[in-house]
Length: 290
Image (cartoon, rainbow, N blue to C red; front, side, top):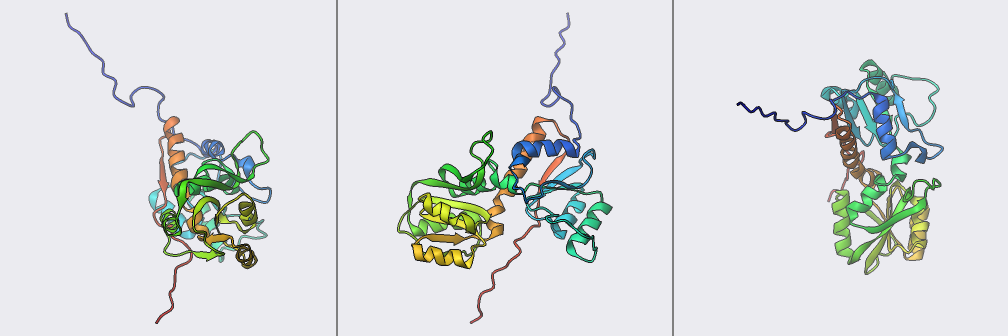
């Protein structure tokens, strides 16, 4: 008598692989960072492309730049997901001699789909601000300004949380530099002797300095801090750190790639989810020559 054994290799059972369409990834992004969390003035979602077009690969970055578009074309990725939207205000015309016009012309010529997750990703759980809070090692984190959507607890703009134990100024600055991967930051106000509670807002967050102060934060980390806000911090002996817009938001790119990869694996999508390797901050540090 002969016995036959059938061996099932990993991945050989279950759902067959499928090639997703733009509408499928939009649905997954809506689960990761619900579009209803976007501010009324914002422009999120599919900005260029066809919802029914099949996806070859997805490239994720912070900014919709010509450099990122060229990288997508080189990698064979026909879909770009960025944090900042390509089209922010209504366009009265498309002048292809301008950066946005040239981007649109090249994207349409190469059939590249462009998707933005902006303030919805700021507000979402595990979005821009939770990612920054995690990078700092904060616990007991909650929004500085909670979302009006009661069905999505823990969402909103900014975050405030605590360290397990208070940090000295030198240790805290090591934490900041490690999280942001920057050579320098700007500081307004007095750095306290011990830092336990930290408020933060990735990107432009001057308006949330006072809520952070009112919430008991020892320090507030954000970017694009207004001159008047910095002077207010001085008068209040409250420490504000400007870590630059790029550095306070860039950590979310890697996190968004990971979340999209989980969605792709769960749905057996036959695509690549890629993180940009060419994106750089727009500013460089120029020291005074001696």
